[in-house]
Image (cartoon, rainbow, N blue to C red):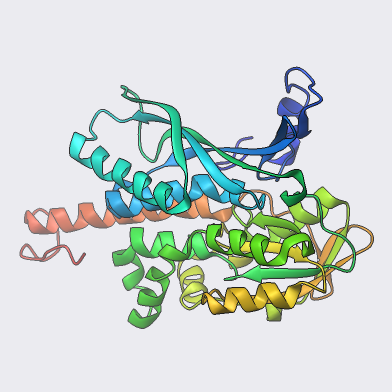
Amino acid sequence: MDELGKADREFFDQYLYPNLGAEREDVRLAPQHGVDFGVVDVGGTAVAMATDPVFLMPSLGFERAAWFAFHILFSDVAVSGLEPAYLSVDFNLPPEITDEQFETVWETFDREARDLGVSVVTGHTARYAGCNYPMVGGATVVAVGDHDELIRPDGARPGDHVLVTKGPAIETTGLLAIQYESLLAERMDPDALEAAKDRYYDMSPIQEAMLAAEVGGDAVTAMHDATEGGVYGGLFEMARSAGVGMRIDRDRVPIMPGVRETCEAVGVDPWISISEGTLLATVAPDGVDDVLEALEVEGIPAAVVGEVTDGEGVVVDGETIDHPGTDPFWGTFERLAGEASSGDESRERGENGSGDGDANGGDDR
């Protein structure tokens, strides 16, 4: 696992999967590569759990960064179809964070938790030397419900429709447009950049996942959040988990304003780049219209883009695709950080009269 980002399947199968502790009969869904959550049975009740890093980027502004950090944590368990109920969170904070900054973070977590009816039940909070942004801890989210309400990640069946909300590269677009606005302003039309920035608060699939589960009921057979590996990676993981194939028409996938332009500006393929906020779902034919109508009422773009088939593999426009492996987002993020830093240094030299630039020039951000 030499690349940045999540462990690939080879690493998972070699190091993680053989070493999962004791076997217990009450574990109903054990860890699998590319699966969002696990499930245990507690006295006949289904308890779904998901664990993720607390991802906090101060450069976004602490309120905005905390909103995203919270929704990342809850996305994986939301696709279980069960109501999120409990949060356990560990903050390993950098020494430089102030009490006032943390107050903003925690008040945002509290607000979003109250909106979902979620209680914080335990945790840990401290500053430690050596801890750095953006990974400042971790958290486990728990959802509880009846077993017959659970939407398993491996439930896709031949004949189901494949539904996609919002389309590709939502996180790639929203995050880069906010974080590197000045850099992208040199490469993009202003209107396209403003549209890309609007994608920021699309970076959560929680609303559509819970809505699809409520409206679709048994017709919704599987859901997945298109995170690392993007839409292609997510579809591949869903098909592999269920042991089925998929046939996809890419022209039917919605694409939000600003996505194409941002991905072109930074040189990434939107179809394989991280897309937190995009929900992938398989839905039986008799329930798909109800789900689409409910999403439309809430203003969430969605479309049926293909169907689940017998066999294996994902076929897009007649060509079989493989899992993309390493997501291009992380390398692109690091590259842009270097470009932005170089630009800042150049401007500083110009302002100090030590370079070739205009000594009176200012920062255009």
